[in-house]
Length: 211
Image 1 (tube, rainbow, N blue to C red):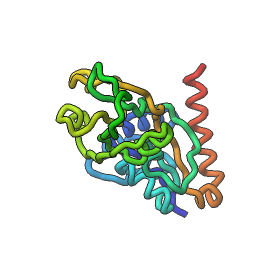
Image 2 (image 1 turned 180 degrees about the vertical axis):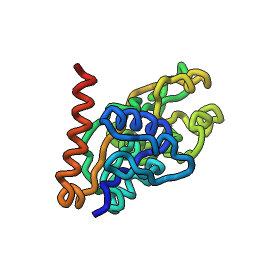
Image 3 (image 1 turned 30 degrees about the vertical axis):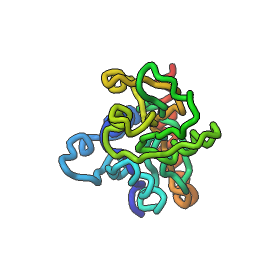
Image 4 (image 1 turned 90 degrees about the vertical axis):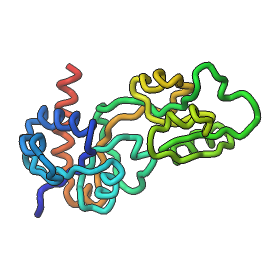
């Protein structure tokens, strides 16, 4: 049987997760010195580096048993897997934001919202009973209100510095976001003992941090 395989989101979350793995006593030498390699041994496990949305795909299809991915990706793309643990890493918020000093909720016109996260945005405004026009943006979403393409944006905000530097502000926080551990549904049955052992090691580190 192959090693338990963990899909890990590349980038900022990757660095924080590597630090967690080290606290768990895992040898991360290969992962730290990865070069261009995407599949690497980490202790008793095999780590696959992938973009956030692909982490979910690999776990859903069972080619990876476990995934580490942001809650933002889960709520936008997630379907069939178990979300088992909040790592409390990469904390930020989904926020509604726009030009500073403007009253977003005034007036009766249909608001235009630019975002990389149409599903999150749709659910948020449906919850308010508001009809909005959602405009999908792939790059710097902050440009949309500055260019009068949208009345506001829905995006991830960590410090708010980028918003401030572009004359924007948070109108409303939508939901908190952090890194989560997800598990393949079949794997939870077939490799339960190994997965539970991995999760127990995470919980032990979290308990130490709380002491």
